[in-house]
Image: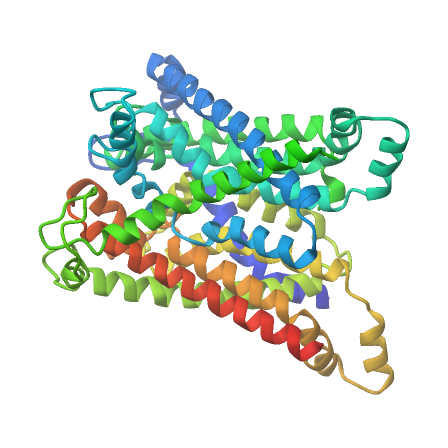
Length: 278
Length: 267
C-alpha cells in the first residue's frame, strides 16, 4: 500500500503523458482526414501510403545510414575515451575531473552546440581558411556545412557522451585482478582487451548503442539544420507531415518508426544481457 | 596495459576529443562579442556588447526576455516535480510491489522512445480531448517523460547501495517513518537529490524535441532559438547561444558547489 502511494505520482505522469498519448497515436493512425479536420474512422489508407511510397523506403535507408555510421564512430571514439579515463588516468580525483569535463556538454543546449559549427564549417569558416592557408585546397570546400558530412559530424559531437558514460561505468567495475592474471599468464595488450575487457564491457556498449541509435533514428532537427534541408530522415518526414497538418499520416509513420526502433532495441538486448546493469 | 606509445596516443585522443567537445561552443562565445559590423565568422570586427544589447530589443529577434522567463519558470517546475516524484518512486522501488516491474519498464520506455513520437502523441491527445496545449501544462508533462527516467535511475542506483541498518537504528530509537525519512534517509541521499535537480533543470531548460508540439502558442527559449536559426544571420544568434550556455553553466556550477559542500560537511 505504502509503496503504491509513493509510486503513484510517477505512474500517473507516465499514464497521462506516455500511455494515453501512445494509444492516441495508434488510434489516430487509423483515422481519415481532409484538409480541415480529423475524421474518426478505421481506415488503413495511412499505412498503405506509408508502405506504398518510395519516399518512405528511401528515407528509412538514409536514416539507417546515419544511424549506422554515427553508431560506428561514436562507439570507436567513445570506447577509447572511456578506456583512457578508466585504465590510463591514475588517481580518483583526476579521473573525476576529466570525467566531468566529458559530461558537462550533456547539460548544455544541443541546439547551440549544432549552431556552433557554423563558424567552423561555413564557406569562410575556420576549416576552409585553414585548408586554404595550408595550401591543401585553393577553393573553399562547399560540402563542409549543409551536407551529410555536417549531419554525421553533429551527431558524433552530440552523442559520443552517451557511449562514453555507460562504457566507462562498466570498465570501472572490471576487477583489476582479472587483468593482472591475464598479463601474468602472458597475454599482451590486445589479447587482454579482446578476451577480458571487451566481454566485460558489453553491457555498457549495449546501453550506449541503444541511446545513440534511438536518438539518431528519431532525430528531426539535426538533419534539418546541418544538411540545410538537403537530406532527409524519418523524424523530419514526420515533422513535415505535422506542419502540413496531415496528422493521421504522421501518426502512421510514427507508429512504424516506433515498431522499428523497438525491434532494434530488442535485437541489441538479445545479443547482450544488460539486466545486471539496471 | 598499453605501453608508453599507447598511453601517448590515448592521451592525444582524449585531448582532441575535449577540444572537439568544447571548441565550437567557445568559438561562438568569442564571436558573440563581435563589433556592430562583424559577421558570423572570423575575423573579429572589433569587440563589443552590441549583440547582447540587441537581444533585449523586442522587435529585433523575436522575444528573448519572455521566452527565457518562460523557460526558467518551466525548468523550475520540472526540477521540483522531478525531485519529488523520483524520490518518492525511489523509496517505493526499494521493495518489490505488484506492478513494480511494469512501472520500471514503462519508465525506461519513456526514456528511449523517440521524442517526436511522445510530442506528437501528447499533442494529438490534447487536441482530441479539446484541451489547449500550454508550456506550463502539456509541455510540462512532456518534459517530465524525459527527466523522470533519469531521476528514477539515479534513485535506484543510490538505494542499491543504501544500508538499511541506519533506518532500523532510527526506528529502534522510536522514530516515526516520516522522521526516519527526513532525518536519516534524506541527509544520506542529499547529494543524489542535488544531481537529480541538475538533470531536471538543465534537461528541461534545453529541451525542444518533446516541447515543440506541446508548448502551444508561447515559445520557450530553445523553440525561439530553433525559429531563429533559419531567419537570423547576425551574431545575435551567438549572443543568444552564449546567454543560454551561461545559464546551463551556472546551474552546473551551483550543483557542483552544493555537492562539494555536502561532501565537506560529511567529512
